[in-house]
Image (tube, rainbow, N blue to C red; front, side, top):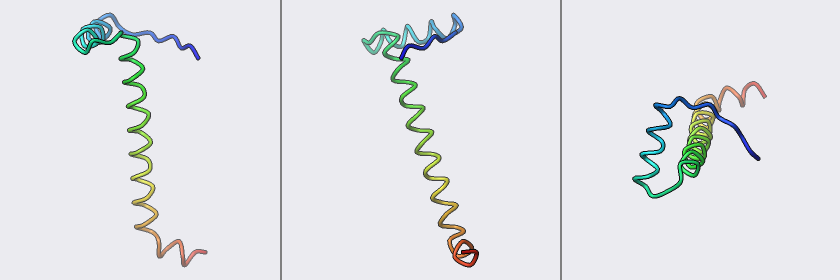
Length: 64
């Protein structure tokens, strides 16, 4: 799938310089950043939902 993003020139400069330092293409760096954010978001959601389920376990049993 192809996606078009509008990125400010200031942010693009940061991305390009960081990519250069890491020895990767800027598009690859953007892909890695997005993958990391998606993974982190899911992990945070999983942690939060597990916490709530454990915290309210007894309540859920009584309501069932």
